[in-house]
Length: 352
Image 1 (tube, rainbow, N blue to C red):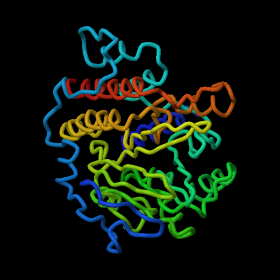
Image 2: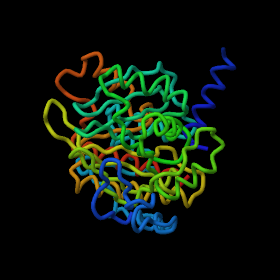
Image 3: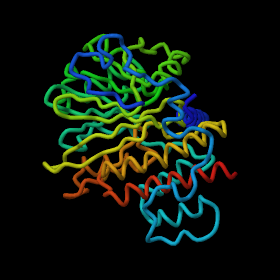
Image 4: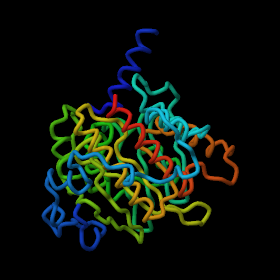
């Protein structure tokens, strides 16, 4: 079970009791990235998916880690204590630390209103999980699809419409990983609007083993590092195994008041139970931080907005209290610091 989902179910129980190998070319609208077979050319096997993100079981050395802490004396102590020093009073980083602290439960919050967070990006969903719509001139790429067909019909579709995003223009649903709270509404969107559903090969297998009644029919495989292009917008889909063996964390361009930025969306937040999975997660964090540096990522997004101060940032945009600044634009140095804090918190669990 998704560990974040387990935490949410635990929270609800408490409340109730109280009351790739890179793919050559790109995907074109309505086409199969494999040229018709439903599989990306050179689609990675589970073993190659792990090795592509450094999942050999060896922990990266400090010299391999994310930058972003050059101006902070981390001092001695546990990695969690160092993470706290690095975070300072940054609410985004403090929320991340809380989410990776043993015993954490997702805080109770009202479901957020649908929010346009960038000129071309809209976020809809619940206080627990969100779906992110990236608009292009030729249609929409949707990252995740909420928890069920019912949520797709009752939340995702009407909330997109409320902000002027036509759900009939959804061409692709990129499922970040194979847990029900991310794939739940995908088949509904495929059936109603003809959207193509993409997931890493190994996470299609993870999804198939889920007991959800809304497991989507297997459609398109994501190859590690695949480029998905629609309407002049190209989204990169690197594997970041750890949360699941085939988690994918998209990188894509966004615009704010006409200015271009580069966003990342970390595809799987909760840590797995096995030590080997935590090591894979750690390697993914450090590798992905390097990818972020090369891509000049300055925007941080999550599909679980209670883990990164996202609910508060959504509210600031809706209420206008963010002013001219977009709270999701961290800047390149702060985005690297986000990954460094994440790395330290994962290291702390490995040393516990």
